[in-house]
Length: 81
Ligand SMILES: [Zn+2]
Ligand SMILES: [Zn+2]
Image 1 (cartoon, helix red, strand yellow):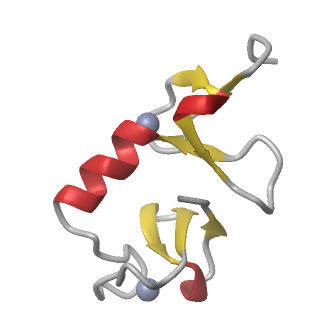
Image 2 (spheres, rainbow, N blue to C red; image 1 turned 90 degrees about the vertical axis):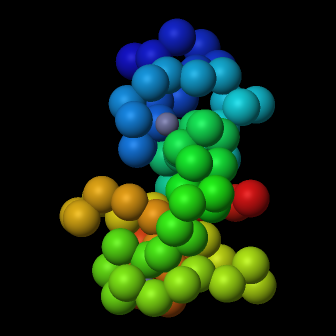
């Protein structure tokens, strides 16, 4: 168990307060920290699954295999912005 109110980032493994995480509306306790999401948004914004750009209008998701961000439509766990 993580300390109360903290969630481990799926991308970097660091535990951060829930308020600083982007959590999944679908899976309890599943989230990524703001740093990881921002780093991805500033660099690639590319889906790890299909290697296509993720447009701002599209739902962002996180994949465990391969590890990274991508389209919800490509089968990842949705992450709220
Ligand atoms: Zn992280
Ligand atoms: Zn994709």
